[in-house]
Length: 462
Image (cartoon, rainbow, N blue to C red; front, top):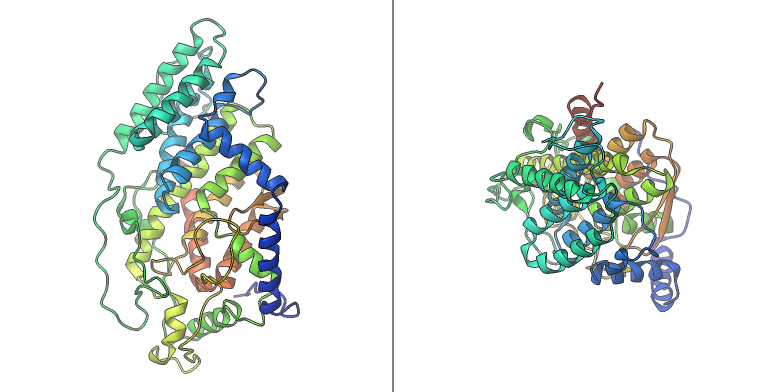
């Protein structure tokens, strides 16, 4: 296997981390930064329940992208759902929005239901209502704010022809009801899987926080797309005594170390960049692509449903796989390498990964090894699903895009969707938190979800 580990000839990590540290301080000091202005504007819009959207002076894309932003704020910013949990919420919202819009358009097969509708019914009212009803059911504590947002939004929509708005609302209500009924008793927030006894190769909580998984039940949730999570079982981690395991361990020991002299400044930035909240991050990219590719409301409904439904099943299958293998994290493996039975590995009892609380970040919680098993990587499971769903929707890999990370405070650009996936696979190694095998197999898992989706969902109606 070719290892995409980058150049060994650039700055030492001491220099790399110093550059990043100084950059973070300078970035925070510049209140007039365009990125900070954008974040502040979005926060105000959402925090005030998007009252400005009722004004005809406000320019926005369409109801799908508007309510995806509202959903992201509700799910991630306000409710604080971690990535794998938020994946389920995004999927429920965007699946219902798709069925609402598609019921009026009738261009593709429904995901769950196809409520009765007329072509003249308001797609915007249908999309907004579907999103609002699902969000309100999932987050009842936020219902007063959501109600105000929804009322203002609906009031700002045209009613042309007369009655089209109320008809669209009815379609959205029906689509949301179908989604909420379908997900009743699906295993969300259920019991945690049993942990294996501590032994070489087996996961256990990691320093410095020794935290437990906040959502170990994810792997037991009923999938949205595939028949079962078990059908996506990965090949699993390498045997501890194998040459492949030693290669993985020695690579991350060198490139993922807090004090690495091999990892470059750009690799350090990429590692931190990709630690942004996975699902909020990618949904920002989808909204950007919707604008740059000039998608209409029907296309947006399908794009956001395909990507988020695929990512939800990737998260479910990923967590199911994590607790099937329960493989230890690199920090444990490297510190306890003298117990792995492999003559090609050597223990470093004080080893620390790049993801350490001492590394500054642009915003959000400090960098840590995530508190759940290594294999497969949650970020590459999700990114694999997102990337392959984007390729399927657009019919090409070659669409350039840029994205800003709230974790690193930097913007990175990609010529192709697949370039982002390749970088994520590497970034988790550079971060010191995932063996390469976990990253590669996670990406394959995400790809398999989309292959199933392509065969069974979202086909055009002949």
